[in-house]
Image (cartoon, rainbow, N blue to C red; front, side):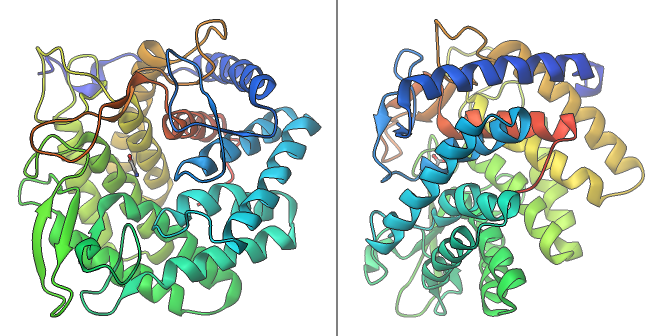
Length: 390
Ligand code: GLY
């Protein structure tokens, strides 16, 4: 457990931000040199990413990183590669390649919505709207939620997951650009159901929740990647932090402010001495368990999203905390030597098998694409270069 309040840790100075961005751009350039217009695998192996087809839930993160790199450097190679990815995302949706998933927001907000916002490209906008249609079609009126994984008619997949909160901005965005309020209504219905079932009295969250397909009644909370059904998976909690901030931005519903404070406070209270969370909050110091740097990167982005939407002391408090968390993330986890890794953020975890979950050991103490992405997003925000793709 920590001995001092987060506010007493060192801050991330403007020159730290600049140095971190410079190092990140070197890493991105080295990686682009290796993978060209291909995509990168979900996580690194011994620090380096294999190439991948555009058929994983994580492909959009690398494209989002390329958009950031283009914003920062104006190098046409970043633009050309990101636009080639947009074409690939269109093929993916036209040919229905691995789109039976709620992850359409992760995939299409960071590739096609980003392309539209940064370049005005209409083809990218149309493609993102096609993705929003598929995501909206995953909404179940019975239970009032968006189904996470798999074919929509499979009773054994009748469940939501907390990660989906990050996919809702694709629906809010689609309503804004199309004038069709149906996307927004589904997004709001989903988050309301999700927070009703996932939030526990102590501010921790379940990872996933099942519903009865016949009645729509919630049945049970379980985990997929956390330690156990009743523990708090660190990344799930972070998805809650950022997802609530984004829904507040789009809806201004005051109840999301309160929920954000509760979920965030649990996350902050359970950070260990060096501020890099263990992969599940069932662990704390002293422990040999792995950290999940990506959970911290996501939560920092959630704080940075919320700060300008607040006023007064709570904004100042979250500002002070986010700066310290970022300094810890930069100090302990930034990848700064392209001969050792072509990722941006070290010490992430994709999944660790336990007797109580149903995932495998993979991407353990490695870089992963979302950790890299949210780390750079946080730096863009701190640098004042931020255009939201969400
Ligand atoms: N959304 C999947 C994960 O966080 O691993």
